[in-house]
Image (cartoon, rainbow, N blue to C red; front, side, top):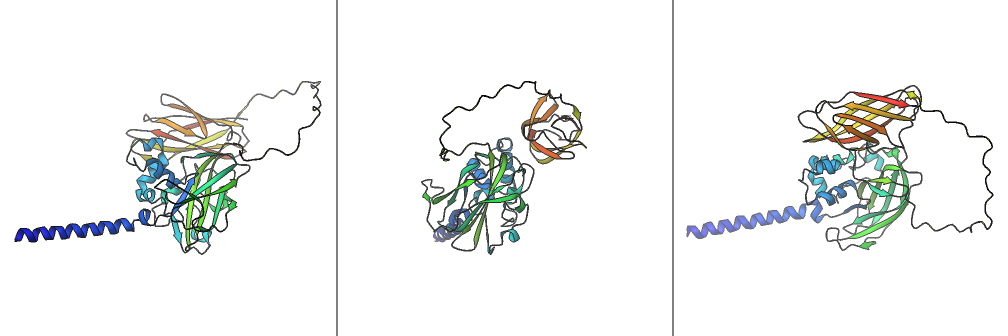
Length: 369
């Protein structure tokens, strides 16, 4: 008899556990409260989940995708809930509810869950032209009162700067979109509709952020997306050819100059300084930023040198061309950040490896004018 009672108690406990498990699954924001995110260019949280969701404990992420690594380490639920980065009851006052420096996390909605998305650094970027198609997935078929798509102004550097409202320029506003409007997806993970918008961002080059606000139509529910892009100057393939016909007569031949052009003087030595800071560190790897500042006169190029004392090595870099010889490192400017006005600054970054200790090296800077 006691055996039967024990079996009944066991069955009751198992049944209760199943009920609790089912309730927990239904309550998980990413499971039942599926909403959406930018999928092209990918938002930071969607991209990290898409690339590493099936392998998020792989230590290779630390060097291959370091910004995703720090986001996964900070709060893995932010990646699992890539479709739930929203803030309720904003009342249209986005700038009042979402402070500068916290735009990518929606004003740290949900506490610090998404806070790592605000960190500047070498997030994976999508190559785009100055005309591109932006895509967002609406999993729950909410529709939109509007979707506002912004692009950062030229000069903003997402590698070193947190996003502020003043860094943004509004480039597209969709207006109202009815629930269910969009292209149906066959991907079972998405399982909703994708909304597309054509965006132009003239005058952009290099690294930028595309920032979007999706105001869902079913409630005062507001989603915020940061997508990293690299403007490479690719022409828009949908741009129609010019309507004017080419000239029927050849252009006049330009005569060669009768006097030789003036000789450009060779480069001279100017002054500059550089500072090095470790902005992130994990087991076996680190991220560092270097700030280069011109002296009292304008310069048109710079070279920074240092020697690591603890055996550190550089694995990748951005904003500079880096060459290493043993522990000695030489970094030279790239095309877009060599020219600096008097007292002006630029930055470059790097990902490296270390063991034991990771002391900050002493830097020397040489400039050309």
